[in-house]
Length: 220
Image (cartoon, rainbow, N blue to C red; front, side, top):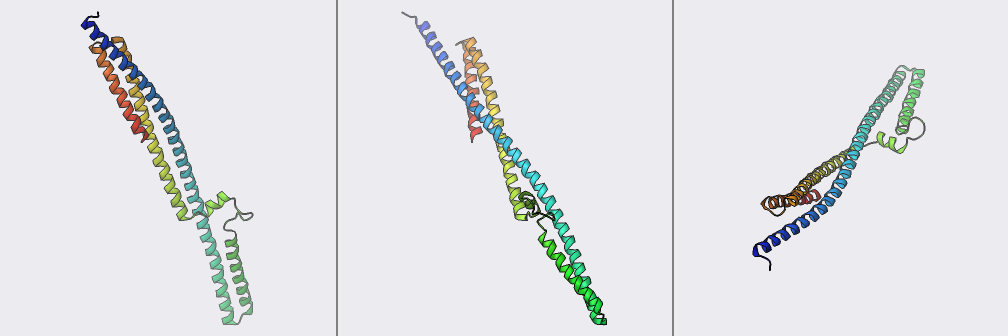
């Protein structure tokens, strides 16, 4: 026969050991889950940050190149227009004063202005020789809608990086809770099923539960 007190102690010890074993298994599973989440979110955050940085550099290049090309195109068009106006004035003066030479020069300058305008249009997407490569041509010919679309995508990548970074931080917090839960479980195993042991074990359960909650928050 087992004395009642001994039986009660045996049942308490079995409950203690069972809870400790379940807790150790839960800690191991949660640690594996949080480690996977941390790796995945860390990679996602890094990828989004790199993509956002690439888009930022590409936007700067597009704006700079496009502005330079547009400004130069305006200067060139002004030069062609000035030449055309001078030619028209010379022709009018030649007609007014009966100067056939001035009229002929005016016509020639007018044709030169037209040829210059056509040449500027034809070489807008070239380096003066072969057609530009697709990337450089994209920089030169970037439109406002394209730039806004790239800005929108850059902002989206920044949001993705921030979200992944926040979830990565949660996973690290969860692993910290699990580390504390492991320490408390070890302490409980040393103290056994006495009052102090149960307090340590229940505190470990609470830490493991907090880690599980953080794992859920890191996923959603």
